[in-house]
Structures are given as C-alpha cells and as structure tokens.
Image (cartoon, rainbow, N blue to C red; front, top):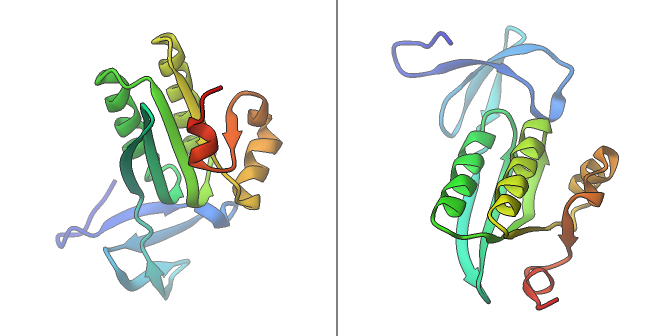
Length: 156
C-alpha cells in the first residue's frame, strides 16, 4: 500500500458505502480526504474495545465500525482472550455502527475457537441495522444473540 512521507495511508475505501470504488486518503481525526478526486471532510472511525468481567464471563464491548480495516484488531483481542483461557465470552455490539463480512468472519472464527476449547460465545445486539445483517446471513441460527449483557451472562 503506498503511503506519503507524512505517514498518511492511501487505502481503497469500502465500508457503509460499499459499491463505490474510491481511493481515499485518511489521517487521524477530522481532516480533509480525497474521494473520487474531491476533497471532503473525513472522520476516521476507530474501533473501541473495552473488556470487563461479569459473573465469570469476559465481556468485550465493541464500538465504532467493524470492517476490513478494523476487524484484525477485534480478531487479535478475541484470540488473545481465548489464549488466556477465557472461554466464556460476550461480545457486546450495542455501540457498533457497521459490520461487514470481515467482521462477521471474525465473530464466526472466535465462536469456533471458543467452542473448540469447550467454551461459549454470546452476542449482545439490539440495533436493527446490525441485527438485519445477522438475519440476512443466517447467523441468528449460529449465535446466541441477547438483548443485554445481563441476559447473556445469566445462568441458563
């Protein structure tokens, strides 16, 4: 991937406006970006990951966008949790604005990894846009999707 001498990365843009194949220039914060040859203001969405404990479950609250650019960080964190022996994991998606197929793949991979270690992974998601992605892909039949962390961590 080419980059400028000031550290600016040039990347192919996807995300929520997938279907448009544009080259964009991103920098941290709210800065001008070049999209389709037009300078525009660009807010760079960061992926937030916050880990807490609840009743023996590791609860990973995710915020922002989970896409091809940010999914590797989520994967790394989930693999790390399993590596530490944490096999009861709740991924809280309540503050996720967007998830693409890469993000879904990370969650499916984490579920397989957790189950291989005789654990469980549950999701918390009530946002209609994010739930729709799980419904369309049939992943509502694969994941236990709950309305709250309390519900996800309650004894079954």
